[in-house]
Length: 381
Image (tube, rainbow, N blue to C red):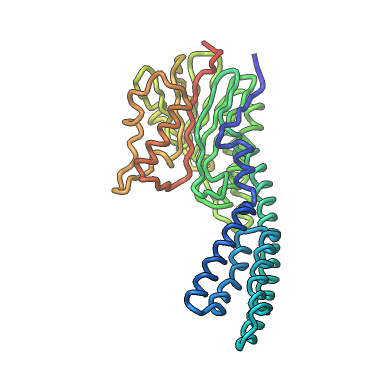
């Protein structure tokens, strides 16, 4: 029986984490006060010991500039007022032969303090605009790639998605899971190229997948719809003078039966993990990537493979298989998957990603998408 898709937010995609990332952080006022007093004490004591009080007090004039770079306008105004008082005090209570130097220093303190407060205000306004822009972009991008894990009547899909560029939540790798009247459709893909143009293609492919998955009863017809979406996108790109792109993709169909349907379009074949054995599913039966079907005569066909209860199907992009060690060796994925049994999909993905990070010495070289597909906990064929 068909049931709507349910998505559970993973910790890496929770709203709390996004709020922390987007917040404009300023130090606590208590810390600002203590740091200002400590700096002043050091300058005054050192000035008394060396007899160069005026020159050393001049260093305090620049203290509001540092506050403007880190603190709120109110905190910057507090620091500026304190510096002005410290500089003015010698002029009032200790007039001497060099009073002109002190007056000039006071004027500089007032001027720099005023500019510092203005600079802090401008910085906060700009950071606020960036926060709002990033929050909007994050909300839009979460609609493009739904947070993992994803659960349908047929499967539980967990995984990790890490774009190469940390300031973007979506890169050239894509994935999606859709529950349909004919079972669950799973997509993972990789758009050729980088940058905003690749993200534009990713949006079109994911949108086409979500729409066609509910319309097309067969996996091959669904893939044909994705092919048409890529061709249309390339036509529009050509009109704008942009290069055409292709998309490697893997589309799965899972229902109540014991088998799984797989159509590979130039993508890395999935790995089936069952009772300690690792098998590349559909290896040698791949078709051309999406957008290149016109170059070959053979139509895309679906392959059927056993998907036993308790097994895990691992899907990934080349960010995993082409990850390199500092010595230039490729990550040995199939060898690292051997012997993994009786663990949840989430634990397997986490340990696998940690392993590849250790293998590459923490250097990420491409977008990374890894999905683990298992039969839904309540579903047994």
